Length: 621
Image (cartoon, rainbow, N blue to C red; front, top):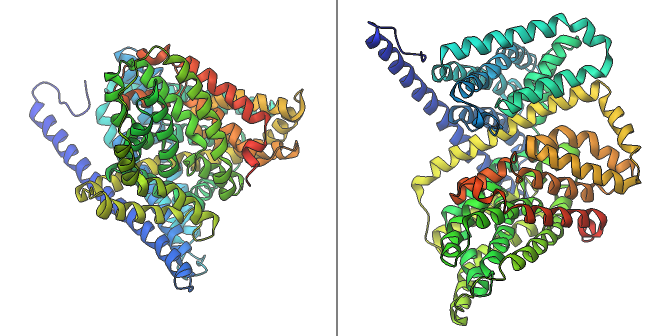
């Protein structure tokens, strides 16, 4: 029996209760989405005002970064609520989707109950943490820091309320079954506490391998799986107060550089809406589309260029695939081949700035964002050339297309020039010091708006609000993962695991290159299971010091691990990026499963070459 359906004779009452619940859910959704959209606009305005005041008027607003930081934590928490309402928190569904109806029902119940347990445990701690911030004053604005810290308990409370509403989508039988299993697991861990304390750091395998892996593989949202494993570890084998988990989450989600995440997500949606991406693809298609396999090269080139604007792989693929796929199908290309190269090009372009993974890796490891932006261009180009070689080999039997007249190509270039200039504008603004890596996204947003209104005359004002909400939802899902993974990384560090890991990795045969090869293997696996951002937040702070100790340049190491994670992310059967490519291209995943392996092998060869030649990553720093 589903929640909200009454027994026989009480159907009307049950349906009425369900209707009331549905209306309340709709009201809650609107009450969260509207201020969340306003927060995105406010962040853009505050950061842009800071750039203008500093660079144009030479009178910087000393309070702009502080206000942006306050608004950002509220945006992160409200965005996480919106993501929960929309079912957009990152989760692994490959195993769950293969289960029967009953198994999927239990997995759905688990995906609701685990976040509820996590939020119930941390909500009182979050209120206590916020209350302790009352007496701390912000340096520039002079406000009580509770104005910022209150975002955590408010966000937790809203997410908890949404979890209660989500219960109505689960069968009571499944909720009871899963609840009993969770209770047995909790009692078992509590009872085994003395034993787990006695085995030292081997207990980490119970919480951060066994418990965490079970949660992730069974479809629990990754951020909540990280947080629940951390809370369980601290409660069972330590005496650390859970307020420290809240403080670590605050620290992980409050890095000013992470402000670039929602702004670049919004920029990616803007370039798709304004037709900028379509203009670039049309120019490339006119220039190369007539050669054998030319549209494959166009797809690779378009992904390289668009990645330099949006920073979001989903936005990149959504901007390119609908433009190219119909014409490629007309020329006889197989659907499986199309989705294979789309997924491979997504992995190829992970290091093209302003990649969200680049921004995240700079935030959690302290590596210069500007250096990462500069170092990511050539490795991405190397992988693009390797993929182009595979495309040439696979397209030998295809028919030639009709050459496009030169005047048409020149006209397409003229139309595409404003779009092609945007990556140059973004990178130049960072390198020349006009704006920081956080602020430069606002310059890109203003540029895209002007191009949409004046140049391309394609600007649908009705889409702005949904785009703002979508930006907040994706950003909230990412930032919650970063926050809970920061807490997990802190727990691993305090346990001494990081020192043990560093010692083990330092003893790998083959020196620094052996360390590189093991890192490639590890991050390919991590990328397929955890996706790029959770993996790098969790393991970046542990492995980057080891790489530095072995004489590996941190930018070079960053490029290697990012590309390795990209390969894992887009490699079936576990890589969720592959299924995103299939969904965007509207292609059955089975169609591309066999065809993608030559492209993935080529990417792996290119990655080993990048790892062996550090100059490719650091030659232009």
